Image (cartoon, rainbow over all chains, first blue to last red; front, side):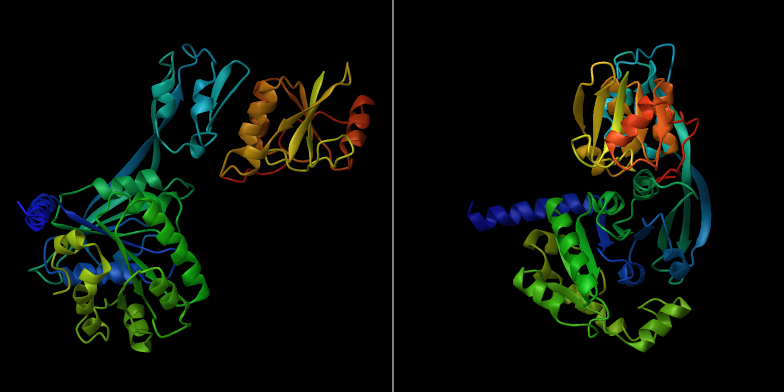
Length: 317
Length: 121
């Protein structure tokens, strides 16, 4: 078998495998307010196929404002935090030593838990030599599931997570948003901004990441951080520049010198801002950016490595 | 008595660090032998969260019976109190040496509660 044939076989195997499970597309950014939700909702509407849109920005979810789904299910969500059995605890301190988040201290012969600092990794429960630690459920927020039927031929499953007031630990709820519900062929994740735990939790395990940025110094600074982050995670990615003709050329220069292809540029237009303020998507009939969206699929193969390009579902066609 | 002073530097003329959890370091003074040792706190200065809790854990593990610092939040206070460590807050004494002198002359009051709010929640 020639090298080319081998590669073709390999790619077709990967396609089969990928087709059998959902393709997950994460829309992330460094900087907030660059247009992640605008793009995620537009892509979900443009998909024209089985799609689940998941709003992973659980600290400030807003995709529902644009999707306007018919809600079908609301569930309260808990996360595990350690409960110490004082009778069994020998105050050995192994749990406190293990905890990277300083959520446990051992003082005066007993282990003390600061549940609000706990990241729910359950490492303490596993390491405890006395078996003194069990899970206690701590309320963290809620999940809402629904469906948008604007185009009955291409319904959008919609899932949104909302962190409870006073809760600061987003990752466990983000994991719940990613895991709940039926698997559609295409999963679109509207990710939280930044490059810390919530963003990493959201993008981890996805098949492709779109980094949305804007051509400003803040946009560039945070894009650089986001690029470093997704590279560290080994995820293929492409860049989309929103409000492309505002600001300066430094984002373009950065992408060019680093060999990062720009998949799409969304123009800076008052009409887009007006559509956004009405809660319309970029795909809305007559919306000015609609002609720009198909460019995404046209430019896609140049933005990603060959296998990923071939595996991309036919979005925006 | 072993006393941990939060300090910006590593000698007794250093300023008393007003921060407990994110203090530059701790100077442990044995008031019976006058021996002083340094307890590093670099890890907590850079901790994302829970610096006070971990600093409290460290001074407890180092055998401190008392802590002299500028401010101490509720979580660190709770941990120190559970281990029976006395806490003294003072904003009046600039250097570790001055605070030590005040402690030895019994002019510092043992705190019965945290004097600042939690940072995290």
